[in-house]
Amino acid sequence: MYNRIGELYKATGITISEICITKRSGNPHKKRKTMKTITFKTNINCSGCVEKATPFLDEAAGAGNWKVDTQNPAKLLTIESEGVHEKDILSILQKAGFKADVVK
View 1 (spheres, one colour):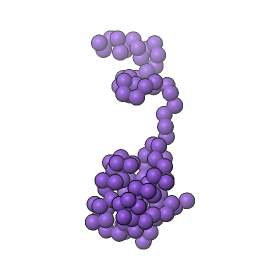
View 2 (cartoon, helix red, strand yellow):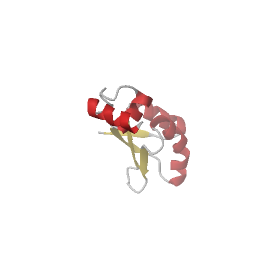
View 3 (cartoon, helix red, strand yellow):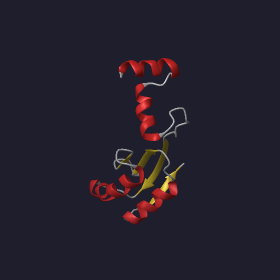
View 4 (cartoon, one colour):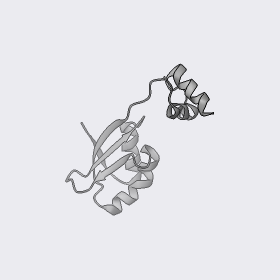
């Protein structure tokens, strides 16, 4: 098996990690989406608020793709994810009971 992978790499330049990605997501030569960073000013004030917002943000942006700086006076929520839209996050936060404005 390893010999075949080596031959594939020599012939195409595709690495083993790209083969694994291809198996899950399609063509490795297709342009991949870039990570998008969006920042919001929120009223997520404390760890209890973060806990309340977590299931909503995990579902919308993915676990580990967002953080809230409750020490910052603006209570900044930063999201780094592919394919996330500002209006979707605003809607999700409103459903969770929070207010937010996009920081440009």
